[in-house]
Amino acid sequence: MSLKKYNFWLIVGSQDLYGEDVLKQVNEHAKEMVDGFNADPAIPGTVVFKPVVRNSQEIYDTIAAANNDPDCAGIMTWMHTFSPSKMWIPGLSILNKPYLHLNTQYNRDIPWDTIDMDFMNLNQSAHGDREHGFIGARMRLNRKVIAGYWKDEIFRSDMAVWMRAAAGAAASRKVRVLRFGDNMRNVAVTDGDKIEAAIKLGWRVDYYGVGDYIKLVEAVTDAEIDAKMAEYNELYIMDTDDIESVRYQAREQVALEKFLKDGNFCAVTTNFEDLQQLRQLPGLACQDIMRKGYGFGGEGDWKVAAMTHIMKLMADGLEGGTAFMEDYTYNLEPGNEMILGAHMLEVCPTLAKDKPKIQVHPLGIGDREPPARVVFETPAGKGIVVSLIDLGDRLRMIVNDIECVEHPHKMPNLPVAGVLWKPMPDLKTSAQAWIYAGGAHHSVLSYALTADHMRDLAEILDIEFIHINKDTDINQFRKELAWNEAAWKNK
Ligand code: MN
Image (cartoon, rainbow, N blue to C red; front, side, top):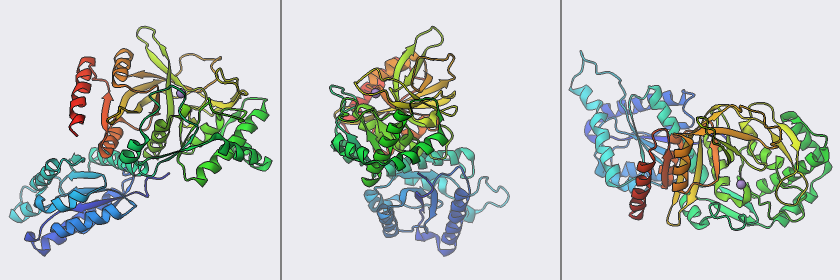
């Protein structure tokens, strides 16, 4: 999973009025900017220079080419000079890629002593980008606008956030989720409209009978299991004598990886209610495939499985892990309110503070052999939890800013990995807001991404975005939900 392979086209607008000399300079400046972006390690994708567009046909042709280039994950527009926006209507009407409008200027400071009308005619983004912004507003286009000097760190970091979101949207269009069985019986929030998800997000969610998987599990050879065990021994501390149980997870993982690769799947769901002849619920097997970037959802939760994969890709190269998570238990101690998040097995080892330990413990639910899993503690640090729900008439993304904390006590009898966090603005408000908004008990937790990444992704995917943060006031928040109800009815 690498973001560098995603291209972003810088399309600089102008018009013929200026003459060849000015347009040549515009191209040179744009090239210099592209080189500057690409030399900056903070810029996660590849920015591609496109020759200045001067009229309606050139704009249309460039946008049509961007639409049809599978490597192009978005366009970035900038009006170094003035580019009358009626010329942009045909092109923007067909745009189907994420759209970033950069309002910047080649020079930072006004050259007070030398400024003349030639300079003014070349450096016009202060008004050229306003004309361009109008047509985006007039056409009701989903877009992001960034303003500032193109060499500034904050400008670059805003760009980087949007590029990660745009890459996430491109990855979303390729999502294929492998589902073994259905959702856990009677559970509502993990289900939803898969047709809507295909239309809006590009997801393919394919059901397979667990028997298809069991055939592969049974066909795994001892040599394949040995090789997988060698990997486990590299990555993890073998903290059990029950090697047979670990070998069974290795067998399950080898089979699962074959299934995922053969079908070009990027995420998988399991359901402990539908294991048939499987001797263990896949635990370590699912944890270790998540480490590699696959998405996972427990109990048939295909939405969280796909989101886990997309967010892992968006976080490529950033510090901190991204994982499938579940709100489990509260610590309601006054002044130290926290949530303990975990899952019955499947917490991604990218969250681990130290080298994870492989252990084997009975599962308190279901009727199978005790499954092997990796157990670990998680570090302190800022993060987010994200839930995607289906409200019937639309998809809603809910994000809560959180502060993960070091584990204050050992939990010797808890045989799973866990994360402890303080949700913003406080547990009481956060939990109320999350529940009013309909957020799931399953989520994706990320130390690497921020609400800004997810806001940009929601804008690109054209889905509702709800952010619970340090400024959330519960009564204002309830009004926001009510207003959104009206706003989305009119979309
Ligand atoms: Mn669960």
